Image (cartoon, rainbow, N blue to C red; front, side, top):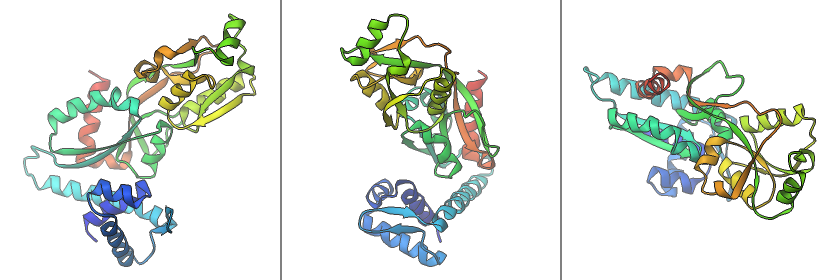
Length: 298
């Protein structure tokens, strides 16, 4: 099997959609399908379950993700070693982060990285920050901008480059939520308010810990993927929410929500670059890691 086949496999493993994977890989869906079938024949097992509507990884397909990532990383290391002077790195890095992180924390990182390594291509994927760590653990990305979990898995390395406090926000628009808060004055009725909550991730854990500490059995209106969407739902009057300050500062809707003063403020987020420790030997990843370290210690 060649590197191109492995790259096509990883594209489909990430998107689980032939159309999106083929578009990302700049080939037709039928060509992608043929390549995947040829790869499965070579491996000797089915890597994907697929029907007319859905695509999912088989157990063997999930195991094959690590092999594909390791093989491609070894190839990049070999290509780099061919340059005796090591003057310029080439290759591709995949990086995952939230939309907000892409123009805040990531911007500082890539600004310096681009100046020093112009021949390294960055494949940037954005989405729910709550799944950033799991995408690294599953081998779907080389690295991620993420919030540091309270218990960092031993096989992950994390370089903190910044932080963000957490804020409770409520709608400003006239609605039942804003009326309850206004009428209550300093005694916000936390137990009777509706909550917009993240589906998963560290923000969800911080909120659940706050509920427990304040003896609140919450009324959850909706579970939402992505902090940007949470701010939007709050601004429309559907409920209150806990979001990172960095998200609020960069939201076009920040003037449509109000910050609430809460008893016992949830712990701040540490935000930084996360990679699998074993991948730090990859020269491309090491280059990004070094810049991240420099941002940490200017």
